[in-house]
Structure formats: C-alpha cells, structure tokens
Image 1 (cartoon, rainbow over the protein chains, first blue to last red):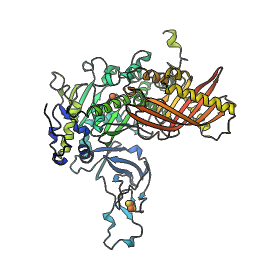
Image 2: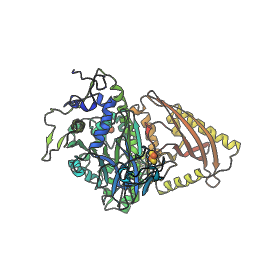
Image 3: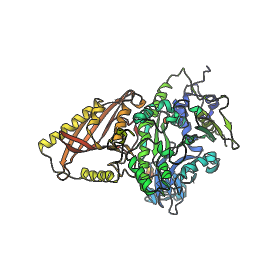
Length: 441
Length: 198
Ligand code: FES
Ligand SMILES: [Fe+2]
C-alpha cells in the first residue's frame, strides 16, 4: 500500500499546493478527502463556488420581490427576485461590519435593512443608505458598499443555480447530458410546472457531504442498506418498489449513465412496463385504494398516467455538486462541516393535475425519508467512523472497472453500464479534481 | 381472492377510509386542540394522565406491538413537519401513519434490519401540563400535553421537546387512539435520524 502524507500533518504544504491527483486515483480516493478540515475548507471555496451550484427552485420565489435565504457552500446568501421578476443572489453579509442582513427563511422584501446599524440595501444588493451619513467623509461612495453578489445566477426550467466562477460554461452547457433527464423529470408534470411549497425534510447526519453524493448514484447498496424497507414492503406479500434491486441487479434492465461534468443517473424505469406500472409497484401509502378508485372513476382515459405521476419518477439524477433528483423530490446537499451535513428533501407538487394527485404525492414522498434514507444515513455515519482508521487510507470505487462487456459509450460520450458499477463516483471525482486544481473546462 | 384479502375493513392491510372526510376530521381535531378548554375534573384528568403514562412506558420499553394495540382502526399517528401541523394535503410530514402505515412502522422497527435502529434508540419521556376535554356530542376525549423525550443511541444523547395532541375514542373497556399528533418544537428544522417513536 502506498502511504500518502496526511494532509493535516505539520509538514503538509498549503492547501493550494496539494497534489490532489495523489488523493484521487483511478480506482480509489484517499480517506482524508472525507476527514480533513483543510480539504473541506478548500472545497467550500472551489467546489461550492467555482462551478454551478443549485440554490433554489423558482416556485419558492413566487412573486416580484420574493426572497429565499440559503447558502452557497458555507456563505449565507439571499436569492431574490427584483420587481421585474429577474433573479439575483447576494451575500447575506452586511458591507459595514458583516452581520447578516436577512434573518428570515423566505418572504417578500424590496430591501433589507441590517438590524445592527441600520444600513439598507436593495434586494439586488445596492446600498440605499447608511444612517446619519454626515459621519462619513466626502469620499464615501455608496456604490462601493453594496452587498456582494453571486456574480452569475441562471435558471434552467425553474432550477436556479449560481456560481462565482467567471470561466464556468453557460448553465445549460454545464448541465449538458443531464438536461434530457431533468427534462423528463420536469415534463412528468403535464405543463412542466413543478412546485416546491411544502415544508422540507431537513435530515442531518454526522458525516462528510460527499458520502451523500457517493450514495446517490450507487446502485450497489439498495439490496443491503435498504433491507429493512424491502422486508417491510413484503409484510403483505410481494415487496414492490425497489425489490428489483435484489438478487443480481447487474443482470437486470436497470442501468447507470455517466453523463459528464460529474453528473450521473440511475434509470429504474426499465423495471416498469407500460402505463400504470409505476403506480402498481408503489408501496401502499395512506389512502391509496380510495385514491385509485376515485381517479379511475373520474378520469378513466387518463387514470394510469395520473396514478403514475402520484408515485416517483424512477430515476436518480445526480447533478454535481449538490443537486439530487430522487423520486419526486428535489434533494439538496448542504455541507455544514467536514463531518456534518444537511440533506434537504424538498417535496414537490405539480400543476395541471387534480389536487388529489398532489395529496397522494405528499404521502408517497413521506415513505423514503422515513424508512429508506435513515438507514443510508446510519451507514454514512458508520463510514465516517470507519474512516478514523488512519492506517487504512483508501476508499474504493473500482467496481465495474475493466469488467468485460459492462460499459458502452454513445455518440455524446455518455457511458452506460451495469447498475452497480461505481462509475458515478469515478465520474464526479474527475470533476472534483478539475475544480480543486483550478483548471478551467 | 381469499376471504382475508376481500376484507377491506381490515385497515392494517387496506386504506379505503383515508378520504376527504378523514382529512376534514383532522382539520376539526386541530381546531379543538388549539382552543382554550375549561379545567377537567380530577377523575378525568387522572384517567388521561394514566393513559399517557402507560402509552409512554410501552414506547420507552420498546413494546411496540402493545403500543400498536392502543390505536383504533381509523387511527393516525402524525408527526408534522410544519409547526402545529399545516395542511397535510399539501405538505409532507415526518410521519403520517394510518393503521396500515403504523403497522408497517412497527414491523419495520422489529425487522432487526433497520440500520438506523441498530443499535436501538433508548428513550425515556416525561409528559406534563396535561389538559383534557371530553367533547359532549362526539364522545371523543381530547388530551393536550407537553413532552420531553430523551434519546440515547450509538453514543449520542439527544433531547426532543414538543407537545402531543391525543384524540381518544371511547370503547367498552377504555379508550382507543384516533389521533396521536406529536408536534416537535423544531419540527421543520434539521434533525438527525428521526426513526425513534414519539
Ligand atoms: S453590520 Fe450592518 S449596519 Fe453595521
Ligand atoms: Fe439508498
């Protein structure tokens, strides 16, 4: 085994000089990427700063002058709409002496007045005024003291991203091959209208943020990590949704796609055949039978489609570094510290369907956060514990490497392979490496 | 189809009863649980406290099958995310368990395969500020109380605070839970591993 220097050892160089390539090899990554605070701090600047990071959904900013408080890495920010509806993101950090100027999670505001000494800023960042301006000399130029800006903010069909990276490509290009998958997910709503209006599951775990990203494209774990859920689902007979992960998933029709730029998707749809099949395989939620009866009676022509969109989309789309589309949820990874992470599961409703469909969507979106995700997160925490062994340096991601007949590449450079291939990890670590090395795309 | 499968009234297997009126009942229960009530008589108050203490003990001792027995066929075990409850038609909850889901939950806890419950949560809870309202028309008993749940699991001790709303339906030999609503003080904020029972 090759022994790499511990990044935090006193002999280590400044974070900017670390030869990251030594820590990300083709088939493994070094444990310190999950445990070392200096790596984390560097990530919070480079990964959560120099590439497109998901910030919020447009439906959370429903009217002119709406705002949502969130974070870009560790930086508190405010995503705002101006009075014409244009999107902005500003640092929630007063230009005077750094207090946050907005302490609400969301709302409507044309301006923000800092509660500390009363400086007031427009929701686009410009300084409107400071109390008793005679205390500042004649050189005081208001235009110099606006709120700092997330310089680039773009929305892709309602998904708002921001970056400080001037050399990052246009958002649509960054999403690249992930776009058709995101389109599929959005277009399950008849008019493409997705709405985030429910309170979210804000799940915390004591582990590094990348453990959640590792897992999101991992088709290897479900039959083990989710045994309790599969077992529960078989209480009344067959085990429904996800049972197809059992046995030998590599021989089944599910595939994982490596989409480039660190993105990937697991496609579970080939497990389902024909309209109504996703619904038929859904675990039983409160009110399921009554709901199905009602939909079939009132919308006989359209029933299967309405039932299917009441259950999950059957893709796991991972958009590097922090957006995970799983089921009907928009999941966001929010790093808190090197070994603490918040995973926010935003439940979604959709426009253009009867209200009962959205009520059933609420019930189906309670299932996995209650009986699936906690077991994964327990495993993330145990990984973090296991990583304390300094002598064992490597985390493997070599499953599927050099396996005959697994991988095929299409004309767009998308690699398709067996669902348990760890290509998702290898793919996003290449992107991670690029960002940490400060290389442009 | 076998006889058992056709018995749609078995709500631990079927959920035909969670309909519009089920949600409407919840709205109504919520209103009652938020209203001011006159002080209950000593006997009524003692009965209610004893019911809550017994329920608490069953959970804290991990006797989940016995706990499940306290619930009626049209029950709901509800842990909202939106403080106070919100509108469950439009919002997700930490738990929104009808009889079947609650049976699932207990089954899930007892599979021995839920890694989020290996090791199991040890809990002890204290319940206080108990108020009771016996509703004349419906015969339902409403109980409001505050709780502190202490949990220890995997080397970490945590405390959860909040209030319970119980709606009990009268039975020949006592009371059955129609609604148990556990309102965490910080229900919409970050929580690690909420797989314990409230
Ligand atoms: S810190 Fe904001 S006005 Fe002083
Ligand atoms: Fe999982």
